[in-house]
Amino acid sequence: MKQLLLALPLALFPLAASAQDAAILAQYWTDSGSVSPEYAWETTVTILEDGSLSLKYCTGYSTEGPDCRTRSAKVSDDQLEAIRAAALESGLKDTPAKELSDDMIPIGGSATGGRVVVDGQEVDLLSFPTEEDSPRVAKVLQAIHDAIPDRLRRKFMDES
View 1 (spheres, rainbow, N blue to C red):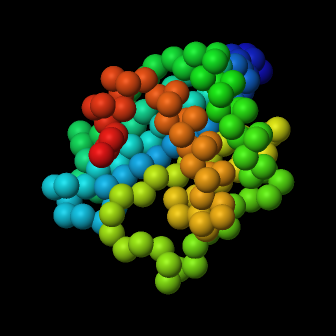
View 2: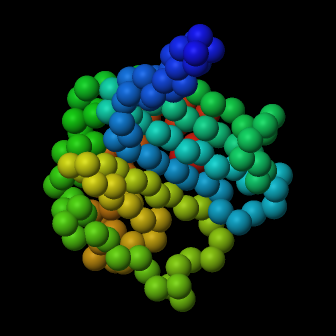
């Protein structure tokens, strides 16, 4: 019985820790596209409701280990609000964007996409939306992109 009482707080610790974690507001990813490993890179950014930002940058086709670097930052309340406003104004929650047909998706080249949470619902920000949906998706992606600190964008994202 004594062992059970000692084990109970340890078993509940992950639940307490996860209850304190903020929910995801937005995710943004961009990559080099299909290129030789020495030129390949991928950046993924996650922004939480509390303004915490985490960035993961990997080179080659690695997803873990020495070819990956992580950074963190803080997003201002104004930037969080700009993301929320762009997401709401886009109407993507009620009318999701449609993706280009497979034969229309460009081959090669970089890609950028993401996801945002609107009223508790995840909304995909497609890398290749149809022409009519592209402006709505682009506006939300731009709001997320603008919230990423310049120092991180310059170092870990393709700005060309």
